[in-house]
Length: 479
Image 1 (cartoon, helix red, strand yellow):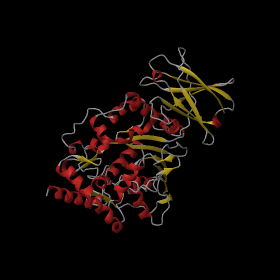
Image 2: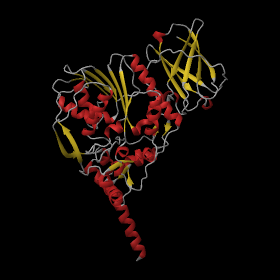
Image 3: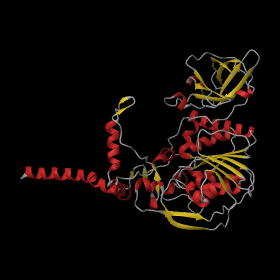
Image 4: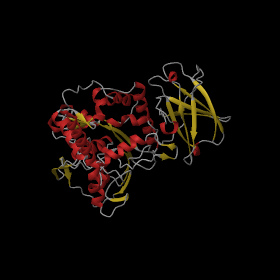
């Protein structure tokens, strides 16, 4: 009898395992969830030979083909989040039904980057500001706070908020370096309406309106504030956290829907037949054609160049209605360009570490800086050059850690028989160009070859840390 029960148990188990694949011909497989990419069945033999990750990739493919995957995920996450008050699939169940992203926990707990990394971020922004101002632009940098930074009262009580965060510490360095910044957290705090979406990582359209007004005030630009603008508030928004935790569940949250007046606005990039439909697409989360947006508005004033992330899409209708011409980019690295009255750099708090992943394409200007008298060799330094972009030369590399204190700036001197030129470099480790992990000791300098007399130059990199400065003669550079 016992053996028969074991056989029945095994048979039932095998039958249940076969159910998903038996249903596949009738369902077409499961859809991608949240930000997942559609995956194809992996190849056993690739260009480099046998695919060592075949079994793992095949397992992931079969998992995504399971037609019961979505309801099973919904059931599991409902149990974990609603009943067990835990976290699942990167989502945290907060108070009053609010959802939060696990991606923001380090910021919330106060797990911060090193002082050197934070200073490098601030210096990168300051050098970008200098380049923008040389091109005649007003510059504003702003960090949009994480959802749980602005609304910690909705986080589960078991999560204890830390005293500091990367954002709070970065502000100190930004102020010390004289960066023209907008404190977006302060601009949003204290409003009676919730400015973030309950089921999403982003602010709602009302929060974006507050953000737009704060940026325009920081630029000292007269602008339409949209006070009293008509809107409807509807339970109709499917949040990105809902898509991750409860895919295809039908769960929605409240969103402000404003009546945007776009009669005088035209899109140069991307182009679309129906302007209202195109705006709705660009404000959505598909992120397919929104890498670079260019608009014209004859009734607007001035010109805008804005670097933004996903938080910028909800501010789009306000800015393009305000400016005569606007260029709004999600591409990084971005190029500091001439011909714009205003330059805005917006980034969300959780993305701060990306500030030093690669340097902006901003040409350096020669400065007065002498090599330090006390200098010693640093034999492990390295520098490379990249002239793939016409009319430019990038010098980049790494320094020994002992050359850098927290607030060390990095300089590159070029010397020929006729002259000596000195430039300050971005304290950025060019990860894509150098490969490997970020050492935190990188530098990157972009030069316009049109601004430097032709000739052969020897290059020296040095710093101004609290320790005795160090120098290292590097390769000869021909311009």
